[in-house]
Length: 457
Image (cartoon, rainbow, N blue to C red):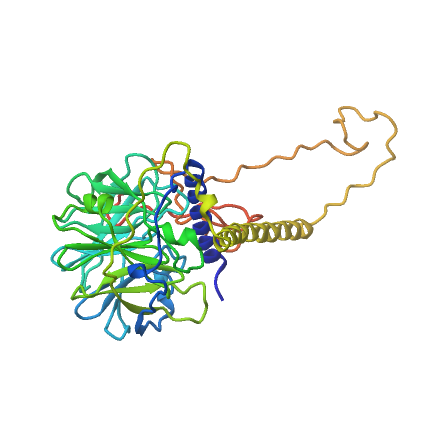
């Protein structure tokens, strides 16, 4: 059965996506966005070819994937289960042959990328559904395994961002792409150095072409960037949403120019209801993808291959006169509006359920407390008894209740609570971590941001 923490995490993702979209709608940022009907502008999306299924309970929250000559490498996003916090090496039949632990606890891994020579694996620990991380991390390890990932820290110049896509340029510079109505592109300002914090700089933003590919989140799922990949030769890159893959040409190695000015080819991914992972095949001829399946208990993640589209997306229309723009809400179909309302309603139901559980537990705890009988005394008649406090029964000695404040977990230097992902319930009996069920006392939790080398990310 799917855990409550994961339900809350998924609800948070939907809520963030809905909020970002509505903000963009209010600003009219999607007015005039081109609609693309499937790969090569075809009306029907082609189903991907099943490669293999991963029959391992530890891999149901996959968010990052790379295909190698010997198999695949995959990683989960911010799971609450220790056994899922691994880098998984798979053979060509999707059997897990190694599960490499991190040197210290990761926050929220979201994507994988290979170095230009294909020998080094980079892991983007950059997820931030609750928008409280202005510092993120990249991990590095040999793509063949055999060594735990080592950490490098980066900081955004303009506050917390949620990024689920990582690209490594031909010169080895990492680029992060945020998840939201407007995808922002950030680049490391200099070389990554262990034990030091490298600043990020915002270098551009892009809008994905609008498509009509079906997915559980409707329009929202079609405009948010959830993963990225580079072709083996570095001359093409792909971004993906929950619904489609968008492939850009990078002939001169300038990633930012390609993503902000290029016209992509659009390949629908209709078998990817919660797809966040994408890779090129080792020969660069096809896309390899996988969707997480934590939302469907008992269903194994399936790796699929898709032939790449060859037709460019529709060019943006000519600029409209001022005052002639329509907001995004006026362009939504009935299906899109229904999905939007359902997504918001789903988050509300989760919050209501948590509130009910908290109230019930609180009342049970109160009912279970022993009742102290009041000593018998003479009937109260006026103000009798020297020194009696106001409201004290006659003949009863005056006492004063005292309480000791509960300890409060410390914050780190950036004001980030030392819990991991917000929304994780639980803890041991008698306490809870941040985001736990209402009604239980809060206890401090070990700092998840403390790394093996004693630093913080």
